[in-house]
Amino acid sequence: MELDLLATIEMTVCAALAVAVLAIGFGGNLQARIRIAAGLAGWFILVTLLAAMGLFNNQHGVGVPGLGLAVLLPIVVLSVRVLRSPLLRRRLQTIPLSTLIGVNVIRIFGATFVLLYAADRLPAPFAPLAGWGDIFIGLTAIPVAWLTYKKREAAHTTVMIWNTLGLLDLIAAVALGVTSSPGPLQLIFTTPDASLMTALPWLMIPGFLVPLLASTHLAVFYRLGRTREFVCYRKQTIIHES
Image 1: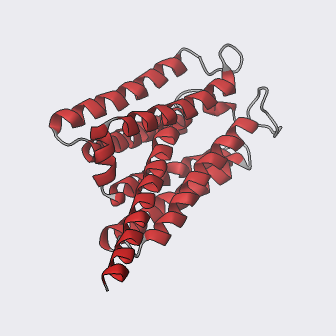
Image 2: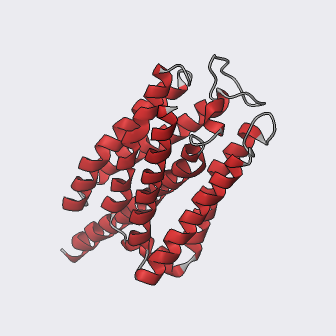
């Protein structure tokens, strides 16, 4: 129970930090930042309420397939919302890459997965892979964000590699979690299974933090594509002018 209480505090703090960083980054003024923070906080509260009602419970709710929808739907909604809003799209194009990368430092708390595996509450390969993968991405987010801040063009390849690994880590963790949980998609049969992730406080990881952080990776890819086009355009312009 101590681990559950610690995780509740940990995930609430991580969610608050991520919301604050992204609200400041995407909000052009105080009013916009408050709106963005309120929207993200509302999403957090909604997922918490649905989880408390047992919506994602395998026995009485929609189970793992519903949890998969809870991961994918917010990513789609956030992507469409940002790209269809001229204001948010401009903010996406100007927000420092170091901010989008640096927010992933909260993933060092993936160490909790390792502790759950050691306590025999989550199975392998799901928990060790998700835990150590998050620890690696969280720790490397700091130097990669710094490199991006100091040398934007030189950091392009490094950021691309880090960002790819970060997104793949999330995808692998979700896939292993789903296939290790009771339900129609279960492929890995172990004891314990991964059904712990469908209950509070653990559900806040796949239900809120994973889609939010996955969206930051997609935003980084979007920015890298535009940066590469700009770099290529600059080089072509210099060659043409000379």
